[in-house]
Image (cartoon, rainbow, N blue to C red):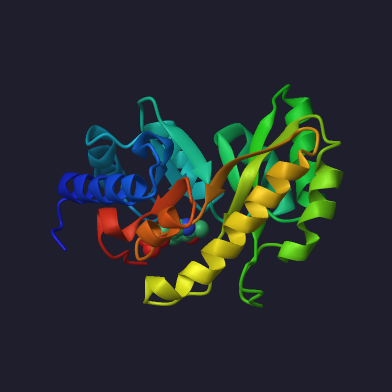
Length: 231
Ligand SMILES: *Cc1c(COP(=O)(O)O)cnc(C)c1O
């Protein structure tokens, strides 16, 4: 992999374009979330200069500093797990929260959003592989959770997110992506009031093109842009 951020971004965008065109989708309709967790500000700024407009972070504290320091027309997304006691901070920092996975958390986001006179856009995280190690709700619990969340006036569900079981071969992620797409379409048809099925957030560095070909319209890419993360 060439370790040049702008070259990497160009390559990722080209791959997105090719994957979208294969399924007759406008590449503009696929949103690239550049995952900047653990990455220092200098390199993030390089990515922004190369055309990145959405940054994904997974920790509140780290994101807070970056959001304060990095200027520009950037949309910040929370992609990592959110603890209920951090909801108050999260709603002030992020434009989209990808990781809502309980009614308790949705209610707290709603309560904080109401106080701040905001409507917070969220995605529901599905534990599509039913793994003990992953956050997210089982697919079967989604209809009930959406019905409950639909009553919350300051929360606006915009779609679904998942992290399938890790597998180095992206072909093995396809069955999970397919299940997610079916779930997404099914919920869209149900047309629950105040629930929008607009974004399907799935696919990371090693499988984003497979995810797009199965219907993802938001991909979260870190390592393919910045190189391997050093923790
Ligand atoms: C870290 C992370 C990513 C990006 O993973 P890469 O393999 O670096 O592309 C995407 N989504 C979530 C939820 C993550 O935590």
